Figure 1: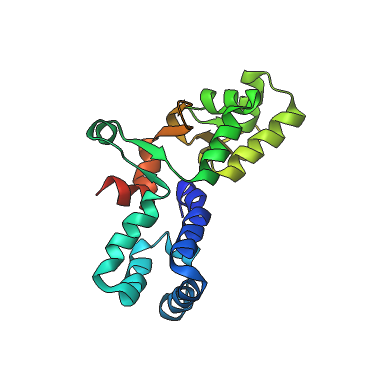
Figure 2: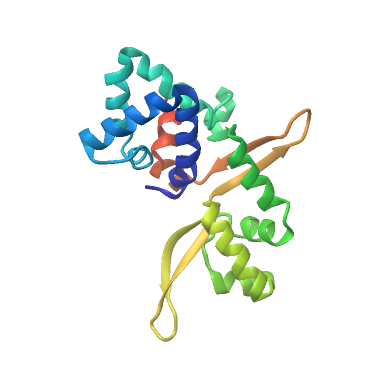
Amino acid sequence: MSDIDQLFASALKQIIKENLGDTTFRSIQNRLFEKHGISITQSIKEFEKLDSVLTEFFGSGAKGLEKKFLDSICSIKSKEDRIEKRFTILNPSINQSILKAFSDDEMSKILNASIGEPWTISEILEKLDIPQTSGYRKINLLIKEGLLIKTGHEFTENRRSVYKYKSLFDNVNIDFNNKVTVNVQFTPEVIKDSVILQTIYGK
């Protein structure tokens, strides 16, 4: 499962549960395991398997439900947004993660500096002059939240392999007019590797 789909997975699971109710949700979980040996969370990586089970339950209405579920996470609002590959994040918990990160000076610096260019953790701390104690903690939090993603590795002088990380986003715009709206442009690699974003972008 890609980093972004991992970020979306728990939100999507909760959305499905809220929309379908506990009984139907459990039935779908059981059918996924019975038919494919996977959970709902795992089925996000292989979306066609979730689709097949939802189709068993809802027939032709499954596609409409899937669109509703995915549009509750993020969507493309206009033709211009589609051209720019700009997504509006609609899920409150994901929005909160992004807002929390960009409201913290050090985490914001880390995300902005790692747009487009992958760095090792030690390079991030050195180039941004961030104290190691707080720096490691905040970088690990960004990785855990799925906002800083692993992309390749390099070898140190003693031939030890260390991972490199870059921001999940190419651009983030947070609009505070009336209500908080988070618009993001994911990196091309993120869109390519994400089943969810490909499903939304391919509509």
